[in-house]
Length: 61
Image (tube, rainbow, N blue to C red; front, side, top):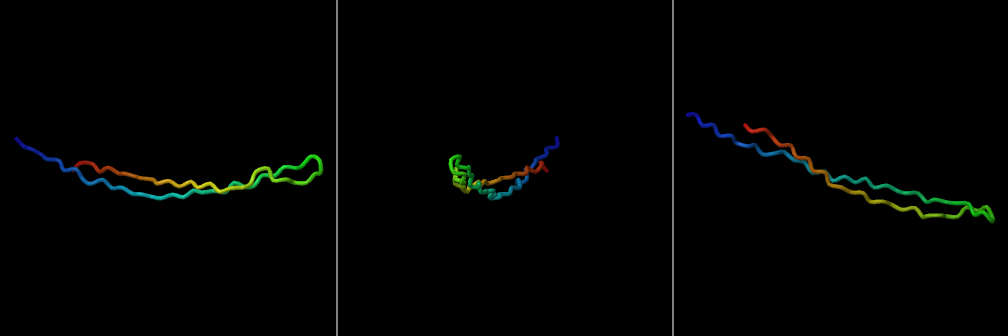
């Protein structure tokens, strides 16, 4: 009887910090009474940060 022992290998993994922030511009509208432009909503910055984890499982040897 032949016994074969499989030894699992260590999986490879990577961590990546991704920053995808963006700016939303100020929107303006025209005042119907005097025709001047008025800020409707002030612009702002959106922080969009994520951590991406990739795991590659190795086959048994």
